[in-house]
Image (cartoon, rainbow, N blue to C red; front, side, top):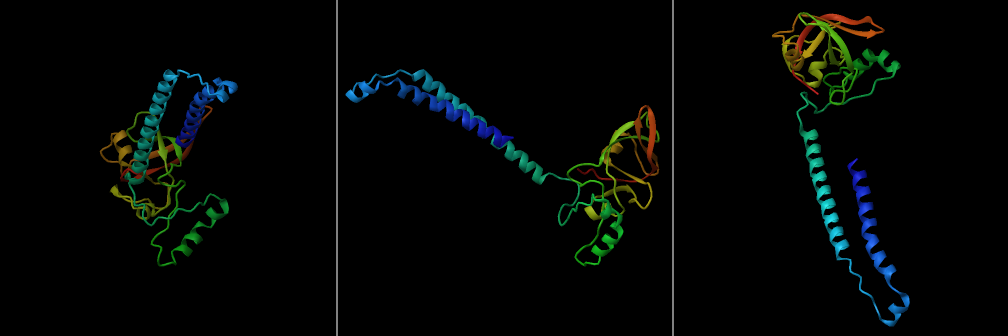
Length: 220
């Protein structure tokens, strides 16, 4: 968007600044010009406006560039909450790949350079799997939360820190992050009953039911 704005601004400034010399040249009488008689055209007001306009646009572009650089630096060095180094993410959205995940994982772990392999329904650091409704012990009504569907060994593989409880194992067991713990006003979440569900035409469809295994640090 910034490059588009810069291109449009450059085009507009070029057109506006090209108008003035075009008006000056069009005001000359060719016969008088050949005879050496020129009429001076007073356009100081237009020149002043043009200079101020160019200055404002240049200043605006400089400010936008500095802000963009700060945003890039922030995105580059911000704390994601997990260890990004030496992580490789592969797209496994195709059903045939997901069906052979266990064999694929076992084959990868034969390589001594690979320490662990895990899977999730979304690429961490870019987006969550989705939002869904939930109910839990001691909570009034329903809540809307972001969800990431993960496989065992997810915490160790991406370098999350376990704040309390244990890692997930096979089965419908949940992990919460510290932010969720604060929002639910729980002093501890381990062992609490948790339920994810969806609503359609006033009907409740239970998706997953289980207990909270533990709490991890916040991550993006």
